[in-house]
Each structure stands twice: as C-alpha cells, then as structure tokens.
Image 1 (tube, one colour):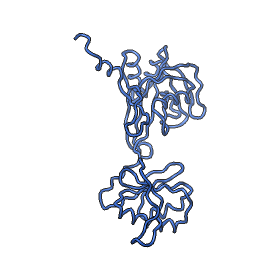
Image 2 (cartoon, rainbow, N blue to C red):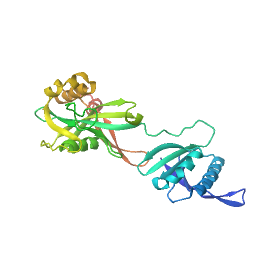
Image 3 (cartoon, helix red, strand yellow):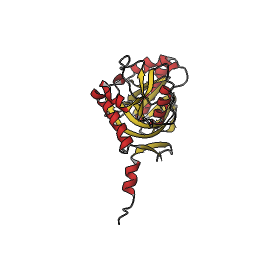
Image 4 (cartoon, rainbow, N blue to C red):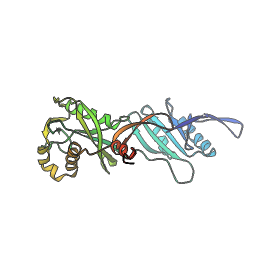
Length: 288
C-alpha cells in the first residue's frame, strides 16, 4: 500500500486545547495507516483511538488500517470493540481495518490466492523426474508425481520452480517456460489456488532426495509415468504428461519471463509471455 505524508499526532480541539492522536500516515486512497510500535496501556490507546477516529472523520478520511505487532496483543480486544475487524495476519503482526464513512466499504480484501508450482523435468532419455511424498494426499499410495511446492513471499515463479526441484531431488535445473496454469477454489484455509505447470531442463542428473518430505525420487520413463492408474484417471496428471510430451516433440510454446519495470516505482517484475509466437507475429512478412 502506497504511503504519502505524515498525519499530525496533535490537533487543537475547538482551537483551544491540543488533542493527542495516534501517529499515522496518509495512504493514496484517502485513508490512514497506523503502524503501532511502542508499548501502550489499553486504556490510553482507547482514548487516542477514539480521538483519532473523530478527527479523521472530520477530515473526510475513509479506511483506517492499524498494524499491531505481536508484542502489542493487549490492544487487539480494544481495537475490535471499537468496530475494527481482522484483515490479515503475518507471523509478527495483525492488521485490522475500519471504514469511517457511511458509504459502501471499498477496502480491498485480503489476498485471495495461494500460488504453487509443478516442475516437469525430462532428461535426454525421455525420463521424467518424479517423487513420492512422505505426507499429503499421496502419502503411502505409491503414486509418482512431479516435484511441487508453494511460491514463497517475494519469490518469482521461475525461481520457485528451480528451488523446489533442487530441494526435493538435489537436481540443478534451468527454467524454460510456464506451460499452463490451473485455478481452483476453497483449497488451503478456504483460499483459492493458482498452480503453474513449469518446464525445466536438467543440468545435473544424480538424485539426492530430501529426507524430510520425500520418500523416494527417480528418473521414470514417460511410458511408465503414463501407465500409472492415477495418470489415466486424474486430469492434471494426464495433462502434465501431455504438455511435457508436446513441448519435447512438437515445440509447444509456453510462457517465459521477461523483465519489465513498473511505471509507478521503477521496481522490476516479470511478464510471462509466448515469446516464440510474439516474435513470429511481430516479424515483417518476408514474402512482401
């Protein structure tokens, strides 16, 4: 969330007596952000909170965000009783929100999706890198699957794919493309899920499986992977095999990352696109 200028922590009530407010910064959407850091008694906090809400209401502010570090857990009940609701939580803080005006609440919801990757890695013998997991839905079923995992906060999709392959199997690999992605809903704690199917090229071949999560890992012929009952009955397994085969044999074009810069803050990010098709369509007609 973008932040602009600091909001005064003292104002004059009726032009006479200064009233202490919570320290806050204005956001670009007409609201304020209170980032609490110092210890405070709940009663004193309540006094400041009520005075602040009154002042912000007069100023026409909209949303109020209060960030409480875990050390200030004593202020959570007070904040909630004043009409604030939970927005999201991280390991070290809780974010609460309040909508001041009597209009439709337009505060953005908490992040709605979790992002995961699956890594198709095939060697020159047309063997796929597969694992059996020690936990999860496929624990003890004998199912061989591609390495999968969750993208960490602040991590790029292509880096997550390379990391997961290395962590689970010890194999170094080069990211090639995103071949497809799946969206599903009501999965992890009611969150939606984005699962990116990625193609990687192996750089090493000697497997060193992860002991904590992986029961077994090996290079499996594509025909053997295809013969698994789960591949024949489970759509995602089936399409993983088909996408990998098309990429190997028919030059199926997926999406590769391109560095771009944000127009707002010059931060670098990645745009995933079909470069092959883009280059073909962008090239001048050679016949003209």
